[in-house]
Length: 138
Image 1 (cartoon, one colour):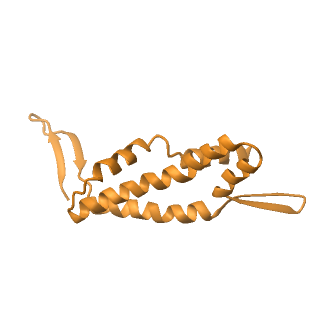
Image 2: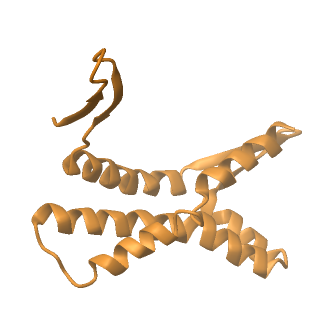
């Protein structure tokens, strides 16, 4: 592993330290995240019960429920920001890292990396789940 360190000339106190991360580690994390998004999107994330009746919800149901309740614009926003954009973001990152790992430089690699970078702000699955947890706890 490569390390980069900066020391004071006089007292040899370290100023900065940075360990280089491997492309293989980043690719493994990206593939793992992409694989784990599938059960995260299909597993039950909210179960409510009242008077003996229980209801379990999965994440894709939230968009369809909003659509059928007469909130089509909000349903589209939830579908894009919670379901589609995270899949697109990490799919693009995985494709870029796989291309770099194999040593090829296809023409689409810049476009895929820009997609990944631009969706960083808009792929908000974590924010949605945090907001849901706060709303459920109250």
